[in-house]
Length: 206
Ligand code: Z5A
Image (cartoon, rainbow, N blue to C red):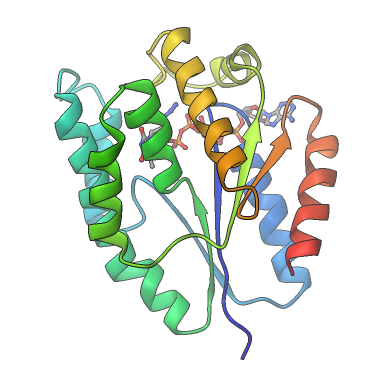
C-alpha cells in the first residue's frame, strides 16, 4: 500500500478554500483514492463545540492565550480521533486549515510568541505534519470582498486589515521557508485559473 497523504488547505478568509476543496475531492475520486474530508477548528463533536466558542459572539472577549490553547485543544482531539486513525487505515486526509493557520492567525495576527506555538505543535502533533499544504493567496481586499457577499462576519472576520496583512505575510513567509511542502496558489483569478494551478500541483504530487 502506498503511503496515505495528509493534505491541508490554507489561506486568508474568502480566498476560496471551501470552493477548491470540492475540486480536490473530485480529483482524488477520479484517481480512486480513499480519503476523508475534515476541517479545523472542528472535525470532531468536541472540536465543533470549541469552534462555535472560538468563532461565535458568546466569548468575544476571550484572551489571546485562551484562543491559542482552545485551537490546540480542538486539534489534539482531531488528531487523536480522526486524522491519525484515518492515516493508519490507509485513508488520505484532506483538511481545511491546520497548524499553519495557528502560526498565521495567533502568531502573525495576534502576535503571540512563536515558541509557544512550536511547543504546543510538538506536544500535540508529535511527528505528524502535513505532506502537502496548498496556500491559496490573494490580496486581502479580494478575499474580503468575496467573503463579504456571504453571511455575518465571525469573530475573526471582524478584525481589521492590519491583522489580515500580518496573517497573509506569515503564511507567505512560511511557504518560502518550507517550499517543498507548502505550495502557493495565486487565488486572485477566476475559479478555473485557480483550479488549473491546483490540478498541476496535485498531479505532480500523486
Ligand atoms: N483559525 C485560527 O485563527 N487558528 C487556527 O489554528 C485555525 C483557524 C485552524 C475559521 O476558519 C476561522 O478560524 C478562520 C481562521 C481561524 N477565520 N478567518 N478569517 P474558516 O476556514 O472556517 O473560515 P474562513 O477562512 O473565513 O473561510 P471561508 O470564509 O469559508 O472562506 P473560503 O473557504 O476560503 O472561501 P469560499 O467559501 O470557498 O469562497 C468565498 C466566496 O468566494 C464564495 O462565494 C465563492 O463562491 C467565491 N469564490 C471562491 N473562489 C473564487 C474565485 N476564484 N473567483 C471568484 N469568486 C470566488
